[in-house]
Length: 318
Image 1 (cartoon, rainbow, N blue to C red):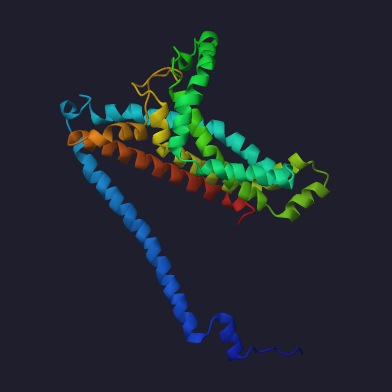
Image 2 (cartoon, rainbow, N blue to C red):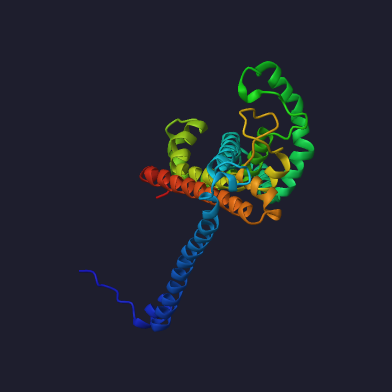
């Protein structure tokens, strides 16, 4: 029979942090983490209560009391549609590019180039949104005007390519600027999760005769599925709430299906443009619009959590 080695109490205390002192440290740390978790719920509850109380007058007001002389829901519906359209276009454009750049950094590029591209991606994520907005207003928008004219001349029968704007300050321009803004966020998150793919999984796929692309599909993407979804939802949250870039780029107006002409608006841009001079019912209208955006963002995050939990059992990250 083999003898069982018993660790002396003194050694055990050294390894675990020292008896009662270690247990006291655990209790303090546990209490601090619990307090931090409760604080998050308290802040969320306070913000929600403030928004609801301030928004109720506008939501229950008669149409003649609303600034636009229509019901609040008729006023906010075009803003919601514009916000969702801009965010959806930005996500559709940015996601495949971001995943491609992340794969290039993690699996294809040489180490020196990979580090350089990674630094550039991190730098893009740190640029303030007002800089993107100024770039979109002064450079990117005017550069797109010839392209908008071409789209109207050749695809003008499609409502989204109606009469183009002469300045390029359109919803499509704002959406493309948003896609540039969320591109480094999605790229950085995907890059980190791609790098964490177990090397044994990748080597096993390659040993079975798979090409690098086959290995990525069979080993990297299944492992990174949850991380990719989280990165996309993080980028969507940024796009939904972006204010300054959209405010500077977009020439706001009534809701229209034309994405390359003047018109359309988003909730953040509406609030940024009007809140400084707002008071009374107008202020309540803008806060109510902010509450709608708050609910949309909450629903998006709940949907993301549901998608992640649904596929978590298939993820190699668990």
